[in-house]
Length: 139
Image: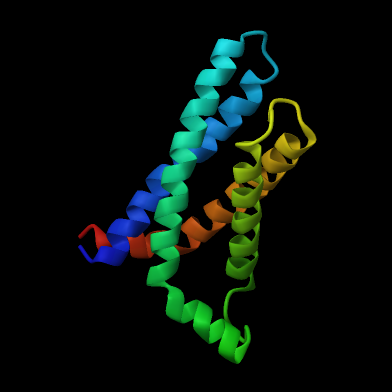
């Protein structure tokens, strides 16, 4: 299997873990157990860090696409992919900020959650559009 597809499959796997743990963390924040919330928070930070690292590798493998977009404009290129890139950057920045503040029930925590939901929706669309290529890579 080509390196690019190995990176893509890892990215899909850690995306699912990060999204699942983010939603679990949000739900746990409405409960009464700080320990449960803390466990979800640790799991989410770890899986999101793995997602962040995998996303960096993914972006570097597609760096030519980004350079072409900057040099030649969007043209027929996917505007949704650009939006996904910007939203992913925002969710990463707000997540990093949350490492330095008490994120539970904070305004920045809620903003991170809302941007995270948008990121999940865009990522699912991004994956579904390319799922045939991912499946073909397994053959």
